[in-house]
Length: 269
Ligand SMILES: [Fe+2]
Image (cartoon, rainbow, N blue to C red; front, side):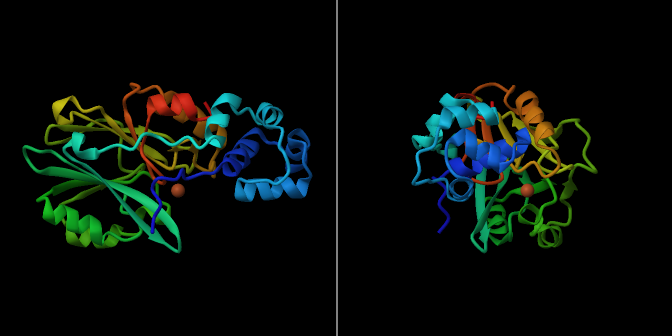
C-alpha cells in the first residue's frame, strides 16, 4: 500500500538535507543537538530519537526555521484536496521496491486535449485513465530524467505516437496550449541539472493554477540537492513559492500541497 497521507520526508530527513545544504558535518550537528554522533546518525535515519534533542539550537545551525520545523514535529500534514475542482487533473502514484513516485495527467474539458507530466515507474494505470477519459495526449512533459519519473517513457511513446515529449533539453520557457489550458515550463535545476517545473493555468471554474514540480519541492521539505542544494533552494523560493498562494503544488513524491501551506510549514523557507 502507498501511504499518500504521510509526508515524503520525516524530520530526520529534513535535518539531513538542511545539514548538507549548510555544509555542516554530523559531529557539529550532533553537538548543536546535544546528543552523541551515534544518536544523531540514528535521528537522521529514522526521524526519532530516544535522547532529547535541542531543536532550536540544531535549527539555528542548519538554517531551518524553528517554528515551521516544530509544526513538522507536531505532525503537520497539508489539507487533503479533492481534485474534482480542477476538471481535470489526476495524480497517479506507482511504486517499485517500496519507492513511490507521482505522475500527473491534465485534460481540457472542451476539446479532450491533454498532457502527461512524468511517467511513474510503469504507465499501465496512466494508459487506462487516458483511454477511459478519452484524453488526447498532446505532450508528455518531463520534470527530470531520474528512473522513477521516466521508466514508462518507451511504453507511452509506443502507445501514443503523436504525443510530443518535452524535457529540459527540448523545452524553452514559452507556454504550451493544451486546449484552453496553458502549460508554462520553468527551469528549476538543483535536485538535478535538468530540473523543470510546469505551471498549468486556465482550469475551468476559476480553479487555481497547478505547479508540477518534480523533486524540487516536497510538502514540508525539498528534494535532495544532487546537483546543488543552494541552487535548488533559490529556484524553489524564486520560481515556485513566488506563485499565488492558492497554487496547487504537485510534487514528484508525497502529498499535494499549496504555496501558502509551504510558506507556513516548510522549514527551508
Ligand atoms: Fe529525482
